Length: 212
Image 1 (cartoon, rainbow, N blue to C red):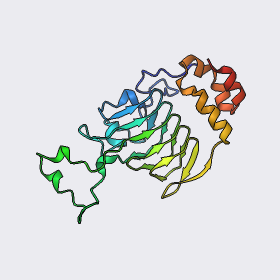
Image 2: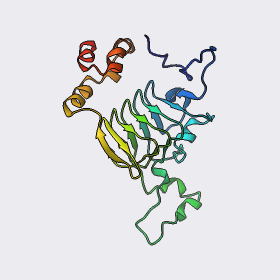
Image 3: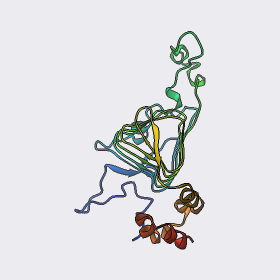
Image 4: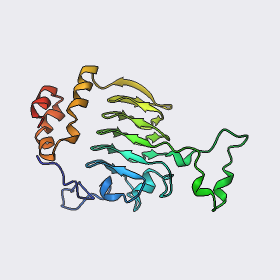
């Protein structure tokens, strides 16, 4: 079965033939200089916005110093928010009050935290997950519903709770190493489509045989 057309804004077609406007491929729906998303990464929302970047990353401004980088084949459920570095206040002084932001002559140069938020490939974000500034989430991770995530998340980890904790790894270390080496998300679309049965069945040997 071929992959959906990565150039479509709405990749899901309902049984009546109409596009499902509550799910979008991000790199077709987001036009923001600090927001990057790879092919096939999608977000869903029960109240689809006009401004998907503003919904998902409300503190990421065109003049922000940081970037939000999302890899390929990521899946983002309703209510997920990326709280990027522009939201952070300075904490080294006697007050956290952001005095400079009220002066238009200096506000754009005042950003105490400039860390990027970086998401790997094939990451699933469950309903209402909250990703904090500077988080780096490894490929294949699952972020549970309502989890509050900061810092580093290893590849293929399952994270739950507040604060987010690694509950377990999805696979053993050898399998994770093999998946990262195969990097199926970088394969041509036809090769990924051919490998779909192996991906869905969890058949690593078949996935290795399918590698182009």
